[in-house]
Amino acid sequence: MSREVVRKGFGLKKEVEGDLSRDYGSELVRYARERGYELQVGDVTLRIAKEFGFCYGVERAVDYAYETRVKFPDRRLFITGEIIHNPRVNNRLRELEFQFLDGTYDSQVGIDALVPEDIVLLPAFGVPTDVMERLRATGCLLVDTTCGSVLAVWKNVERYARDGFTCLIHGKWKHEETRATASRAMLYPEGRYLVVLDLDEAEAVADYIEHGGDRGAFLDRFRHACSPDFDPDQHLGRIGMANQTTMLSSESLRIAGLIGRAMIARHGIDDARQRFRSFDTICSATQDRQDAVHALIETPPDVAIVIGGFNSSNTGHLAEICAERCPTYHVEGPDDLLDLTRIRHQPVGSKVPAIDENWLPQGAVDIGLTAGASTPDREIGRVMARLLELRGLSLPA
Image 1 (spheres, rainbow, N blue to C red):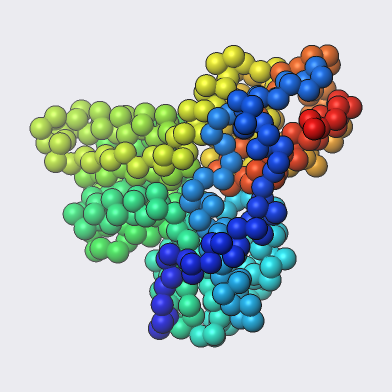
Image 2 (cartoon, one colour; image 1 turned 60 degrees about the vertical axis):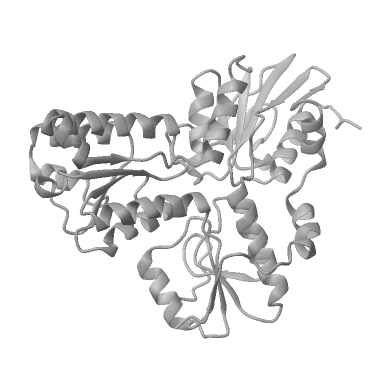
């Protein structure tokens, strides 16, 4: 069995802060922060949301990865999957000789090939309980960077399962965090889970709670998003709400309200109080970034650039918010700004990148900028520099 699980780093923060600043910091972003999150260069105005980029949980995860490399310079280092949803960060860890056990950067080394001398980093999303058990069995030292906000959700989910409540999770069933969260519902014999992506799916669940329906059609719709023995006729009688911490907070709250009203309609208000539980597990960093974007677009920019991995859930939701008020482009980095007329981006609601033309208005332009919680300042600064370069403007001295 694993000798130890490290959850507080190795006390090497000072030793790695220079490397972290070099790899992920940006003087241009610092310059903009000091000037009220706004830069005016020539006829280009860059306005930045006042909360953006790396959150505390991501900073902690990346810091622990660097500390682990310093602590064990001669040991094999592994990560179960992407540490966060940012290609630059994951590729940098590959350069530091971390090997990935699964996912996009899979090194083709499986858990069964690990030996006790190896070190395994658990990502900010956490890992499912069965993966944790397999890792413990290897005898490896485990470095757990699971975000505290995720751990708070897990506590609620485990409480629901212990008390025989089905955990209804607002999230993406394929997402690493949601898979890890759902696994906590299976720690108790009466535990069940069901994952809903959006209001449309939540409305289907609410309708079934109130009126029943076609059991087979329901199970077919949610076949990938529920616990193995889930039966809507038996397991929607007691529900506890949870959410993937990076989802759109307003939607999570609307879904909780919708399900709560359905429980009241079915069981009456007094009985529903005993059958329905909902706790605020929206991540404060996610909320802060969404609030900052809402503030940014109160005066809509001519165009908004949202920076982050295309598979980053929280970045995608920031793009959704911006798109309500102005043309919006979700990019991974400066290379996606192809030229003055073409941009590679992931359209809101799509999973496939596209190239759009005539994206940047001519003449004086007001550009809004924000970035997901897994995007380092360095990438944000590089996008800012690229925008100025495209307009033939020099960086501020």
